[in-house]
Length: 570
Image 1: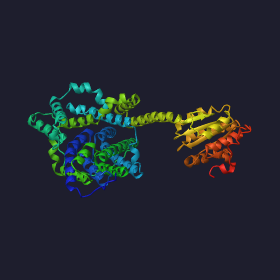
Image 2 (image 1 turned 120 degrees about the vertical axis):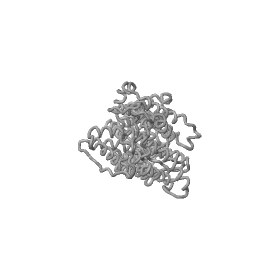
Image 3 (image 1 turned 90 degrees about the vertical axis):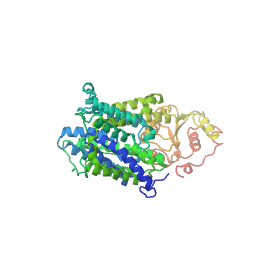
Image 4 (image 1 turned 90 degrees about the horizontal axis):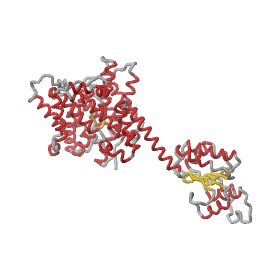
């Protein structure tokens, strides 16, 4: 695969049609997410235009469509709710400042070339995190779905108020919401090829509300969106809220990175190209900075828009730029037409997005795949919904990594072996077997194999106890490509313990990074130079001489070269 050129004009028709189709999908989603976030429909539209344009222009995934997404909206909702509650006058401006800060964080991550590390987390954590976000989005849309304003307190506040919400249900708005869901679920595929179900639901729901319920008062609608270019929003910082704003920016920025790069991977699989993760993060950061400065909510790579864009024929970033320009036309001249859209219809569209975000496939079979994986996923879901997004990811990654390290350590520990005679624990050639047998259990061969991560230190210490009645320890690291600091210290302790008891030590096969590590730790300086050799056979010959079994055929059949010739590095 190769990294595709970002913008080209070899496929203008496919790119324009891809951008047009993506714009049609983006319009109802941008309105829905803008309203759901609490910033208003205009903020959703501005975010779709600005994030989409600059991410396409400066990003590293040519066919990626960037706009407000469900996960980003969930975080934006919490940020806006908290900051406006703390400072009603400046809270919304502070929330847009957080978007700018999140964009700066994304640019820093891209500039430091950390893009490829962002998505390196266990699938159980990603699945639980995304499912938790889907559940949050569903819960937050419950009140507008039932025709009422969202209660204070976010997820917990909404859950606590469910009895009141049901008791005060607004039948007409709920009917419109149910109709919208029905269109999204049951719209025929033949129609969906030409008109996205989100747009069909938006149009039909609005028309029904005007034709059948036009005379009914109390139906909550978007209201008029002021046409024209977005206004510059001066960044606002509060000393009392700065720490919270920074943490919110970190969460929003990291979520945007994960959301965008996971979608980039999807785009790669469809186009058979390879995106530039670091460049993509910079593009996403620039897009979010622009969005925050002009009153737009945060955005990231959108899977639905990206897939449709590619399937319609797009091959370059021209499609994303086209999509943004089409939405800009809507913002400039057609925004007032959206004033009659019922909020219940938008709530239903956002709620359906929440349902789609949940990883139903893995939820159904996680317990069959691995009980531990299932527990991690459910734990991340609970923490995401009821505690905090960053806590959920942090705890999930920590637990998953600990379990992985434990499994790897157990596997690696099997490659820490000690023998005193020629058994099958360590493969020896005929000469080595004979030498070890002639040592009469006075020589201990201690062999390490494979990467020695820190979890293997216990196995090294455990095998060290086998040194009770032996005179010579041969440490064979020939097949060790990497040894961590913790395992190196365990080896050092084993050598020191053997030296304290007057035993002789040989190190076999230390080269490359292993040699450098032992030299830096001063392990080689503890031993005579001729005790550091490259051949296990040579170490066994010297060890056999040291245990002094001087019978007539002791080692005469195995003449050894001088010690200086066998010293390490000769």
